[in-house]
Length: 372
Image (tube, rainbow, N blue to C red; front, side, top):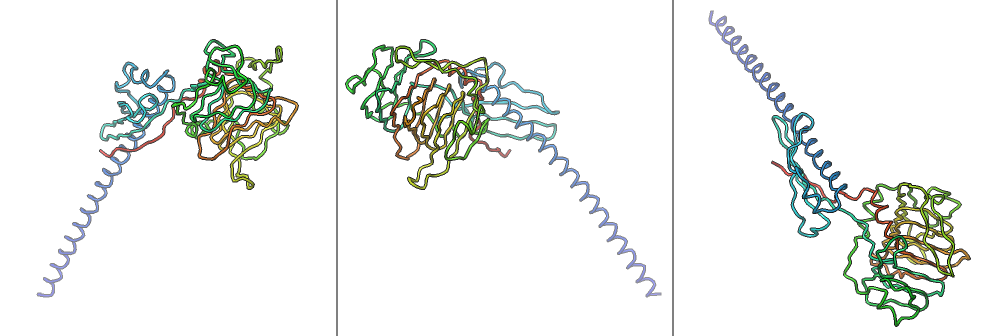
């Protein structure tokens, strides 16, 4: 009898243990379901917050400036989205209040909230003159024409703007600041140039931002016109003949969208410089060179050319090099001068600014999630 009683107690204890394990298992499942559901809600709230940042970026892209963006009516009003909503708030970036803004987006779901923050930058294609350089500029060639007087309007600029104090002027023709008589000797540089300029254009940031929108990408060391054909839009520009020996601006045919050409050349083993050679090529839009560019004969461009290293015009061909728009070069520490020799014309054109504004002008330069 004692043995039977012991077995009964043991069975009851085992039943109790199984029951407790079952209850614990059910609670685990229920708790896991709750956690899983909250995780999904949190993920949805995160997606909604991200949508708020994209909305802010789109609005900044369409706004004329950061200030205009921050003054948009109802910018901070809640927006219904994805079964929830988001709200946007902005603060001025202390490092660059005119071009950058810090945006916070809060995404809401019925049972979750997520917060993300990003710094947005507004790019504007403010071309200060026909030629802008962060390094020494050397000009040599009696068939060199650098003209800051507006070839497309009435916004006259300097022929050359440089952040260094000196320009190595040997021979050439410089116009700018409304002066019609060309400067042909160093004595007149002060009238048509701006030296020791405090204008700090983020050329590397321009290249890194817009390379993602490139319509043509190359890592070659040399690019010939026969290789690319009309991929850069060469058939949509019309170089004009000279008048009394003075180069005229290139005309853009029709209403084509700007091309974005991104060139990322290899390092030249001879001099240790990233550089690409361009010959007999032409087109329109934004030309980005992640390094330096050597430009020889038959080069025709309508738009803006940016090289973070430098630009060298060799003039080693019977055909000239013509740019209507502007050239900006020399932000890296590489010592590469802008040598302008032979037949070359760089003509400032204010119309290029509006033309390039068809490109996306707002980018996200930093992002983080704020834990709540």
